[in-house]
Image 1 (tube, rainbow, N blue to C red):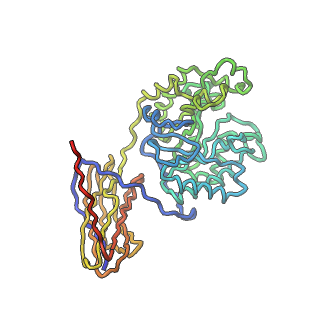
Image 2: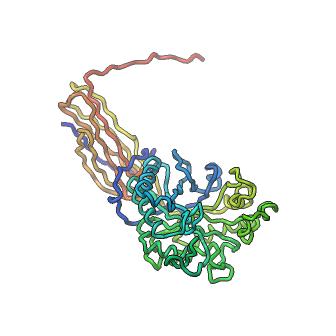
Image 3: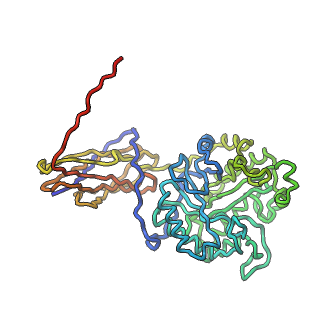
Length: 473
């Protein structure tokens, strides 16, 4: 007989328990991923698009997210939004596109909290769809990416590509309203996106509510200060479309937004600035508008979940002097200190599971059988919100747990002692494994928790003693 028995007792403590390391999520096929309640954040997302990953600067400013363009490869001290390419070129082999997305999520999912699928697909630009925009084609890629990501990381947040404000486009192209063959009115594109089923393949809708020349609080069109919808609050029109099309439960992520400041005089004569000069604001206005935008959104828009300034430090990225992205940057401008001093909303309470130790190992010889040994495991809620829990057994290799699996609730600061009783009788030498899985009603890096239990049975044990060396004073 080889038995693993788990018993619970309850106590309360204010001490915090070290968290269990992140465990790998079993891989599911895309078909097994159910579209359900969208994944959401517990705390408002304050983010930057970054060139250099200056996480120390981000943290010192009180920002908790960064948007990057390559997988991080390791855990970062802030949350990560990864933008993935999705354009017309990927339609030639959707399976290959999905394989690449899934590989990224499989290999880096532990370091990425959210994925943005594509960029400004309502534009034919090289950084957008790369061809005449087609919302249904974009949805094909989005849904492929959504299924692949959720198959390996169900808790990841999938955000649709931030749409570019284009203004109102008259006429149609190939049956697409608001389309001129080069770009499509973002509002018409979004309607086609919904018709194609895009709302089923996102946790949040991406948008780029740049401020242009308007102040952050300028009402949206038809207000004359927001001509053609070119203002920060133009995003309200997008959310109205979401409400009208059954997507009111989804959140909006402003994956880019900002105001551009003036470049050196010689750049104003550069042809690339011809369509940009009307948007220029002073550096003080940039700072005021960015701070005001965050305050306005967190006060008035419960549907806005995260906002990523474009950008933090593209002015230090080795770009050419007249490259426009340099002049959206806030580093070393008044906006940097203003955003650092800006009050941040605290967000909703968050429950957090913590388990210690992180594994149990027992070593015995066959002649020591039958035997019983008891190990204590502490399970705690070190967060600020209560949650329900449950315990189940996992037994991949003969260490069959006989487990009493209570359910209950852990309030903030509460912990339980788990008595893990391992029994064995008549087993030959070898390695026997099992586990205790602790699940909760929260989704976080520490839940669910998997506690490996390993029993080694060896014919002979050797003890080795190291010599005692005393340090001379």
